Image (tube, rainbow, N blue to C red; front, side, top):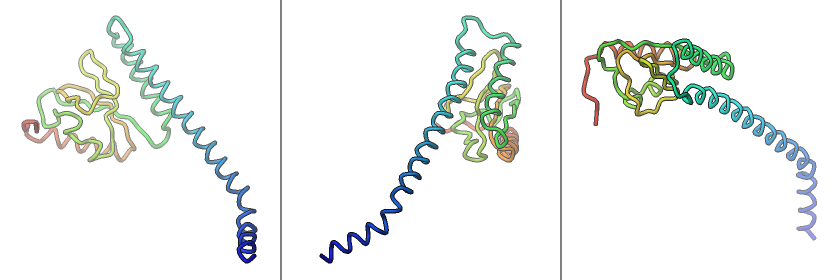
Length: 169
């Protein structure tokens, strides 16, 4: 009988909270679905831009490359408005310590900024692999918050001044 009374007392305390917990869980589920849907739409738009750049039988003209670059930058700025910026950085035409793979350079670890695309000669590489080597004369498209971009510029300029050392194997 005592167990029954304790059970009823606990149920009386927890019972009114159950509808509130269900409502909170429902709101959380709706928020997650909205976020996932938004991320999926952004991914599809970026994929369409990238496919439109690479799915060609003939190389892009300079005007088409510029338009593709601008479309990608606009998409990044639109989806990550306010906090995220993009900047281009031209690497020197001579060998420097910056000419390593993205992984070896550790730019994101050191500065928080990311290399989201690389332009070199007639080649455009969106979302380059960490094993992509940065070559002299390439243009990097950096993405990050304003302070991360500033830090990345300083980091890369310092690397450009350092003597060339063999890559670690």
